[in-house]
Image (cartoon, rainbow, N blue to C red; front, side, top):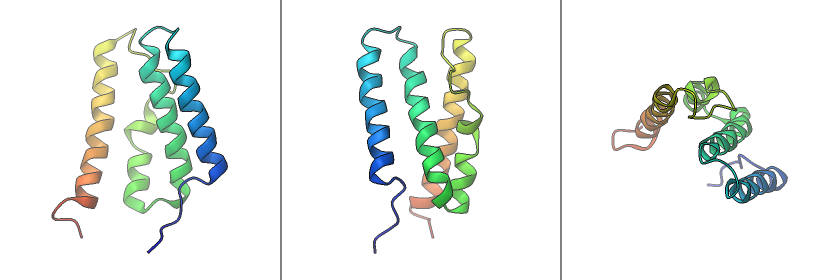
Length: 105
């Protein structure tokens, strides 16, 4: 069974262009900008997913990731920044286990 695409070709090309140019830019930028660029891409992908997401996935997309500032960098309060990233990862992991784990419906 085919599932609806989250991104059409134009959206996918935009995300691809962002990721590749961010990789190139990162070569000349401070290391703390790398996580910021990845989170920006994650925000863009989440925005594209939201209209077609199931209710459980929509809740995750509207969770800790959505509350994390786009321009957050681990420079100011590194410990708090890492804690926020850990929260985003934990929330997504919980959702993935519930959706795809051995006890998933």
